[in-house]
Amino acid sequence: MYGRARRIELLKKVVITVVSIVGVLVIASIVIGVLTAKDTNVEFYQLKKYLSSKGFVCESMKTSGSACKYNSDNVKERFIRYEKGFDYLYNNKSYVIEIYHVDGEDKILFNTGENAFDNYKNLKYSCTFKESILNEIEECSLVDDEDVKLDNEAYISVINQKMYDVNLIIEASKYSKSDLINKYEWNKK
Image: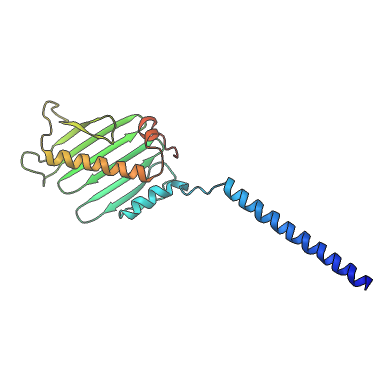
């Protein structure tokens, strides 16, 4: 009996030790998991996910100059992420809109084509904006003659809509819109 009691006591100690070690490991893994929360936006994952949901085909957005593109019969769109900003291009058979915000340079260009409204065919406009490049158009002037302003409300609303669309892209990226607009930096929120 004496030998059996010793074995039972030893078995209890081994079981308690194993359970204690497993418990410590489980608690440690939980604590480590909480302290190192997983970053779901590695390599601009949220930006790619949003654009992909809109029908864009994206490259790896990790490197500067990486692009997401959308092509259909009538429309071509492109969003390029640069280290210090972005470039968005919308092109259909009637007009091209470019919203360029890279390394201290901001510009919005609006070019009409052969299929544009009468009196607006094949013209190039440069646009100014209110507050920021993602807010709204202040005015658009012909590149060749700054006294001639774009006065077609349909075109002005299309430009504003594309500014709004880019605004949604930036919001969906989960990066700080303020830092991107004001500092030209992609900083996580």
